[in-house]
Length: 107
Length: 116
Image (cartoon, rainbow over the protein chains, first blue to last red):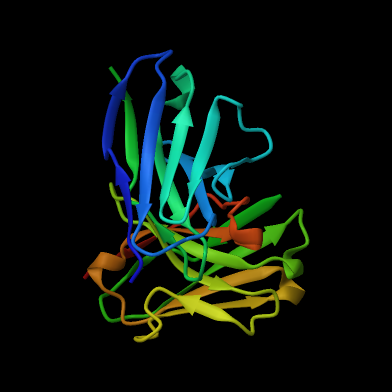
């Protein structure tokens, strides 16, 4: 089975901070890697697809990079509305696989 | 675009349940679709994918066959049948688009509770 491991699992940060979340795949995923944001009680929202493509309507402070097995989501300047849980997802082959999530909380 | 799930309910262990997703506002028949779930207080788990005409299906437990994904393009509807339900299947089940290697559209979810 494919495993997706995110780090850290929990992150405490302040408004204005630069935040980086990493995602490592147990098997190559080429660049078929998406990032989602989820707030409590809400459905996930697509932020990044194909490792580095910004989904329409998503603020440019979000960016993604990586290929193969190692990927990164960066928030350049954390805003109050960015406090949420973030998930990576391998979409290289079906069924897809999520990482365990990274919760970003206010310091 | 709207994806509206329905059919979630309280079910006894060992039972079966079929949940539904009604799609509108996009060309449903041209999209891969899928289901994800989230147990209370836990992370997301992708469950199954289905291609545009239903001829290709993939599920997280393909060897056991407890999750059966299907669709009706004439009704713009997606379905997930879950068999041999267990307590650990208790979750909010989300319907999502799955075209071009990403899930752009999501429903708000339907809660399935497995308990005696």
